[in-house]
Image (cartoon, rainbow, N blue to C red; front, side, top):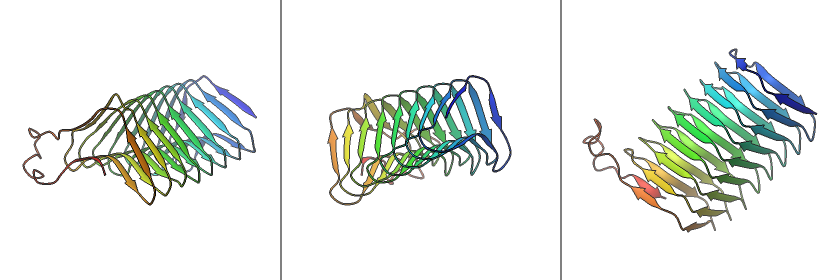
Length: 229
């Protein structure tokens, strides 16, 4: 099945879903403007070999709200528009083995519990060539995988109590060729890697310079902000 969505999608009710496809090899093209709040889901695909192409403007707000969700193996999410995630929502969830998320667009993530992109499964691939801004206790990319590949070539700014990339698992390869990875917040972390036999290759620019003029700078003066942990 293929769905081309060029219109405006608004999902405002808990457990409501804008587009749902059950079955393998589904393709969803979201070119319009999507607003998902209050625990709803914009696009949900249950099946293997699914592809979601999001080139429009997506806003996701509120706990249990999700912009795009794939549950199945070899799922691909391509982000080429703008994604704003607030209030504990998740922008993208890709759950299954050998999943891929490619971001070429702009992602803004803020507030406690908010996650821009969540991917969970063996052999995951994540690439970012877009601009990502994470603040106020949020996480940009939450990746749980073994033998995965993470490539960061865009720009990322990480604010207070936030994490740009949180990677959990073993035998993963991380290539950091970012134009700019700026860790500017208090108790902020650019990239956190947990697990065994993970490799991090850095060829880009990493700046850890927390804002000492911020209102909360004195309170957290001795708490380090970290580029790569």
